[in-house]
Image (cartoon, rainbow, N blue to C red):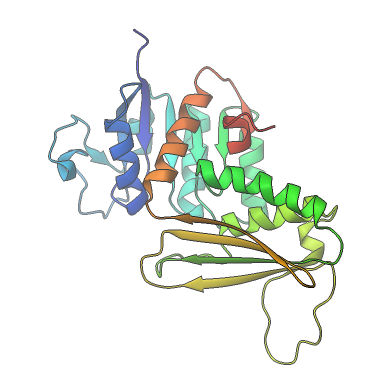
Length: 269
């Protein structure tokens, strides 16, 4: 029997951390090797499996280097500032990295790209298998509906999300722009207010909604004259992101370096 992949979960006490822990405990091909959280977290020092009514033998710690020792992969769904610290630590420890964090600056994305020359990284704004397929569909739809159709990306998330538009919405915008033969930076409209004038052809608009406990809804609208095509994905549980992220962790096993996304994990390119 092949030894289980040794996984470290960052932000293990958060909503996504909770879903990732459940996923690891349920998968015989994975074993929890480390559980990381902030130094002021109330769960520090407790067994990571305590919240599930089981003992995992792994305590929640803030010491990144200790958690990464002899680990295979770190899965990170935290904040950009924390992710940059994890990125550096993984490079030093030669540990693979799955990044589901969103809201990175251009400089931080370049740092991730540079780190991938030394360790293998899966970096995707959304780990859902369904969203990965959605990205492909949007690009194909944009190629077909490239004349006379206006593109709008609408997303909604829970009240606690701190970045907007969501990383997934931006990735969908990039897919649409690619299908249209454009660069998103040249055609994106992120806000409308006041007398904006008529909609300019070739632009991709974004609308952001926040409220309640919505896990994540995304719709790409292709609005033409006389018809409208809408492609939608609705996530009802964070488990879907955890499943995809842990699938990405397995994908990295044995790789020495490289920057990948969920298209690579699912063999869609």
